[in-house]
Structures are given as structure tokens and as C-alpha cells.
Amino acid sequence: MIVEDEALIAMDLEMTLEDLGAEVVCKATSASEAVRLARQHRPDCATMDINIHGDRDGVSAAIELYQMLGVRSIFVSAYGNPETRERATDAKPIGWISKPFSEAELKRTLDEFSSDL
Image 1 (cartoon, helix red, strand yellow):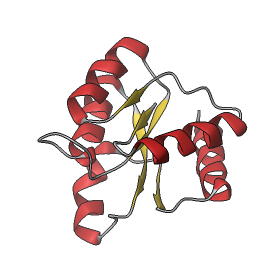
Image 2 (cartoon, rainbow, N blue to C red):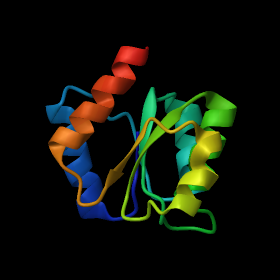
Image 3 (cartoon, rainbow, N blue to C red):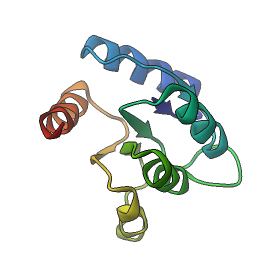
Image 4 (tube, helix red, strand yellow):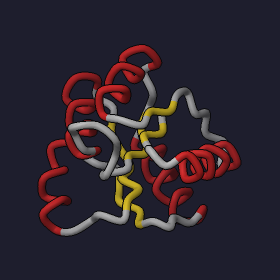
């Protein structure tokens, strides 16, 4: 699952994830849409931007996804300050990748997640 409100970044993430062998089951641009789609599609994990459309941010969405559905997130964001990372601990994040992201970073994080399954 991709949660990203910038269309070009979401498209780039989707292509990169598919190149790495992952299946993107849905894309969301807000926290409420992410929760609704996750309930419907039951993704294994989500890539999560922090600064997204709507009245809630990606940290809030990631915490809800984890607590309600057990879906963990890879934060892909320019916002990774210590306060934000501390707030996100309840989401049990898989990892943090700074924007602009690289395929190698995403692959390494996905590989770590897959080895934990």
C-alpha cells in the first residue's frame, strides 16, 4: 500500500516497488482513505508519507493501521525529526527512508521486513 499525496512521487514509488517484486494493492492520499483502503485490501505493509492531505498526518494513519490491522509502515518522507520519530513508535515502523528515496534504500528496507515474516 502506498500513502502519498504527491501523484508523481506515488507513481515513482509504485513503479519502484513493482520493479522490486512487490504488489501495490492500493494507493491513498489521506489518513482516512488509507484506513478505509487498508480495511478493504489488507496490505502486508504500507509506504507512508508524513505530510499528507486531510486533517491527520501519516504518523496518525500509521498508528491506526498498526493498532487496528497489524499493518506496519515504511515512512518515506522528508520529515524524520526526532520528535516525529518518537511519536511514530506506536506504529512499530519497519523503517525510515528520506525523500528523495532510492531504489536501494527501499529494497534494503523491504528485504529486512520480508526476513521478519
